[in-house]
Image (spheres, rainbow, N blue to C red):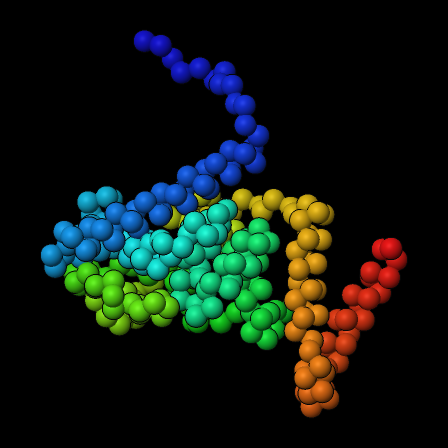
Length: 267
């Protein structure tokens, strides 16, 4: 009997291997969503997402997520080449999903950066944590067990064109029992499934450190952000500036001043 050899030639770099694995996982999610959507339309006949999940060894919630993403973005995903499935998953219930995905596509942004940019456009304070209750399908803090009671698969037409956060299949969800621990999020913004994306350490998942952004990428992204700020700073907004709360005005002026000081010697 031959024994496995450890002399395996690896031609890819670590970054290339990780990128290929992520791309494969992303494509797998799209494929599952497409199959689930077609099965629901043609073959379900009263069966549920959980029933389809049992056939492909996934939970009902996992099938529901992938099916919703496919039904909402499957026909436009080619417009955002390079974005992973998790970008679309994160934007599933956003009324401005097209704008956010377009920005992420143009700037090669991560999911975390796309979420931060959206908060900035909505005037939210980026120094505070986003409210976790706003978007359950963009990654909740706790992991919910799949309901044991079967519910009927919903017709895709019920969701509407904007994908407006309908909850779990079969209607509104009731509060589900949750695991005591908190799911650690990957860089993509989606909880790891089955612990395969990290090593278990005392009941917690060790998440791989995010690769550092190059200076070129960082400057490009900052340039886009500054350009958008300049575009938003219209004459109408300037006229209204004095009417804003003092704390808001001082914070803005301080931020602009610090940016000006740091960039003064770049030329």
